[in-house]
Every structure is written in structure tokens, then in C-alpha cells.
Length: 336
Image 1 (cartoon, rainbow, N blue to C red):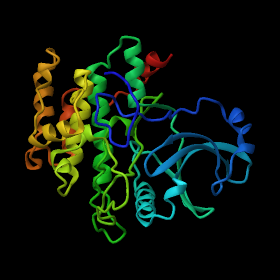
Image 2 (image 1 turned 180 degrees about the vertical axis):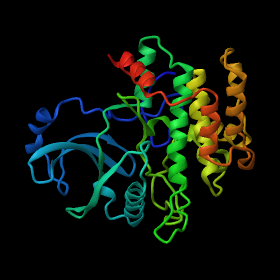
Image 3 (image 1 turned 60 degrees about the vertical axis):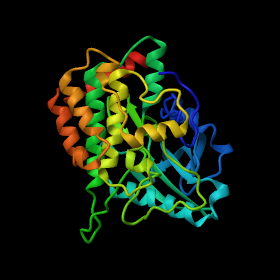
């Protein structure tokens, strides 16, 4: 898997890029840069780490309660040039609302949201780890491959987090009908203690936010879209199951599913369900894993696992028991 730059639609043979999710410097060192930052609510941005079509993300400091102790968070705000675009504000507010509704260890935790200087923003916990593409690229530099048990456990953890998101309800117990719609390696952080976190719901759909992106850049990683998503059809949680299957296919085979193809070629292959068996790429793939993977990657949604939770359970039965100590040891080996 060769690395490359990220575009708003990742369609080549590169893993989607994601900015660093580790602080790098300590709180004291970061505090020295505060005088160069403009506050966003109670948060003082120190360094921009990521910019995408709709928003930009900063490492920021904030004072914990009234004791004057500075802590670190991630602050996301709408790109300044999009602030006056109603659809941009609606999508951004929707992501903030969803993160506030989630309560799962596999989804980044929301801290605060609001408006500052007329710009919408929200803050999340600081994750001490690396994005999945960073982890893959670094491992390749050392000639390492993620052990299959870690790949299975990692995707099972992602599936459990998504199952939580898919099942959220409103205060009047109406299902939110959440679909992430952008499940891809660039939206996954693996922390140094072995936790797996979904970090971006900017493309998510729910009953509170019908799909309308008029005037907005196309978003999402093309190579991880489901057949129905490529065809522009309505989505449900089974679309995210398909995307999870692609992530696991690539981690298990340690190769890209769609390499060196033009976007229209990728769309055509996805739409017809042209997914090769993992064993055609890696001969020692267990047949039980291949069977599970190919259910997740069925082109027809009704033939896939009915939920991310069902997919997770099938992976756990394969021996993908949650093993953060094993995964954290491998992560530290890769980066240290």
C-alpha cells in the first residue's frame, strides 16, 4: 500500500490522508504558542492539523473548570469561506449534534459546541494515537504487516461503534437512522493504549439531516463507498457494513482493493460488486474469515449482515477478541 496525498474523494491507490492525531508536544510547550492564536469560545487554538472540504481542525488548549489547569482538545470549525453557505452550516451543526448524542468508547467524545465570532465550532477529546493510514504507512516503512488477529479485532471494534451510532434514538424515542456514509481508514484513530476510535461524522446522514449537498464539494472516500452509494440511491446502515468490509479486506490482504484506477472505473467495479476473493491476493487467509468478509461485501444490501453489530459478532467468533494490550504493543513497536 503506497502512500499519497488526500483529496476530497480518495479514488487512487493511496490510503486517504489524515492529519496527525497525537499532540506531539506537551501541554507546556503548546501553551507557549497561545499568544499567536485567536480564541474559539473557551478554546485557544494552537496548531491546525487538518483541513477538508467543509471544515478545519485545530489542537487547542482550554482551562479545566476554575482551577486554571490547561488541557488539550481538538476543535473543529467551518472553513471561513463557507460560513455564509446555509448548507455548510446545516451539515456542520448536524455533525455536532450527532457527536453529542453518542456515548460509546469507540467514538470520539464531544466536549462542547457553539458559536464564536459568528463561526460554528465544536470540540472533542484529544486522542493520543495515530490515524489508521499513518499506522499502515509507518508499518510499511519497517517492512511490517498488521497481524491478522489485530486487523479482525480493529474492524470488530469499528463495527461495534457504528452499531451504537446506528441505534441512537431521539428524546421521544424516534430512531435517528444514522448512516456514517464515510467509513474509511482516514476516519479511524488507533490510540497508543490500543483503543479504536471513529473520529469524523461530517458526511453522516440521519432523519434529522436529509441528503442535500447543493453547492457543497463531494465528500467521502470513493474506494470505500457501497454499490448503492455509488449509484446515488438511498442508504441505510448496511452501506456502512459494506465499507467496513472493504477496510478489513485491505487490512487482511495488506493491499488496496482498487489500485491505480480512474474514479469512473472504481465506480463501475463497485456498482457491479466486482470484489475478488481475499485468498486470491493472500493465500493463507482463513476460509472462515473469507466467508464472513464476502457476506459484508455482497453488492445487494439484503444479502449482507443486517447490522454492524451482527458483523462484529461474526468477527469476534473468528477469534477477533478485543485485545487492546496486544494492539497497543504493536502500535508502539511501529512508532517507537
